[in-house]
Length: 309
Image (cartoon, rainbow, N blue to C red; front, side, top):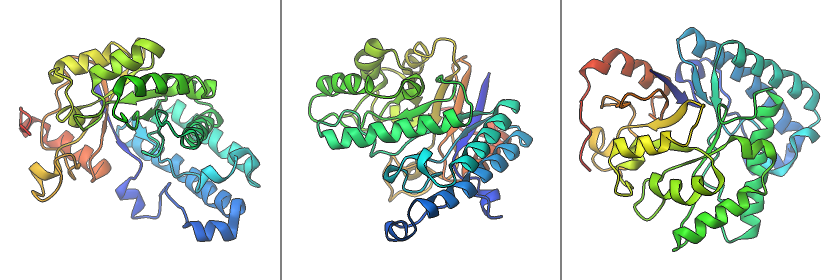
């Protein structure tokens, strides 16, 4: 059994003004401050509810929320926003909708989150950002569990994978309890970075956090494992929570030869192999929910085998 989801933007609804990515440039934030950020956050939160309802009506029960709900979140504490009481009420309402409609919600904070960094200011900023993502989920009333995960990459090997993974595990202990209970790690798309095998041996074995298997990334950083072996190894880290995975096709191979092979295509061109596992699969295609719906229609006619990169 598998469930499919998509990330952040619903193209159909965004054409009607429904978006959770309202933001502003730094110069504008410097002028309007937390008051302006809070007003945009209220609009973004309202639209999360609309997207969740659309997903449920469309048979989609997995959705990655945008990390841009609160513009310039690093510059303030959510609880200090002038509109915090309204924000509390709205987020709790959205969370109730998600729970009622059995929607699994996730976050995937950006690449500036680097817990392995040897630079303490970078680590402190990362800790604040991850804690704030967890806080948003708490305000939504979502259980503190990897059922509602915050997914990140380690962020860098710094010429020494083992030391970097040890540093990650030590800095993980500095997160809030909510963030620690939600955090999961994802394999990378560069051979010099972290494979599923690396993450299993260097992170999971030390602190027990699950591994998100990214099919596309595995093609470039296999750790000597086949796709099935890596998927099953990642599966062993999830215990009683449904395994989360990511899937995308190569833009270079399928759509635009001048692009990097790691770039995501607009749509999917291969049949996703689950190898008999029950998976939640976030489709990381540029066409968002349209790629997901197109895949469901065309799945039986898609390629059985992956392209050899």
